[in-house]
Figure 1 (cartoon, rainbow, N blue to C red):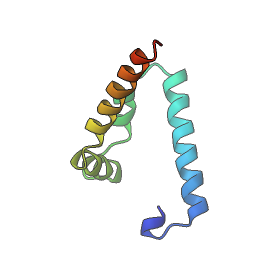
Figure 2 (cartoon, helix red, strand yellow):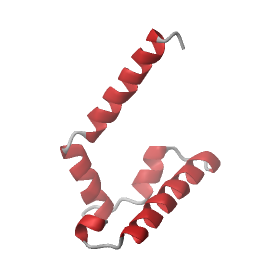
Figure 3 (cartoon, rainbow, N blue to C red):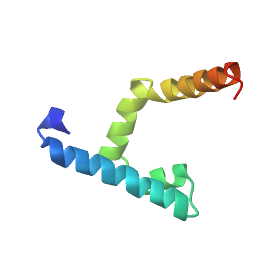
Amino acid sequence: GVLVGAPGAACDELAGQSLLGSARLLAEGEDGPEALRAAVTWPGGTTAGGLRALEQAGVRAAFLDAVVAATERSRELGS
């Protein structure tokens, strides 16, 4: 977004609408997240490039670590 020159307001709108649309497709559709991701990812395309960058940065591992940490903290709190 903004890092590559897009206007901040447009970036906010695009991010919000992307999240809203994805959540709606998951909630109302029959496909799971992997099928939805595959439906919008083309070899060599922008989504594939972005996903590759996220994977190289270790984002998947960070999300998994966050889930484990939150689960452990919930158990500590007796939830």
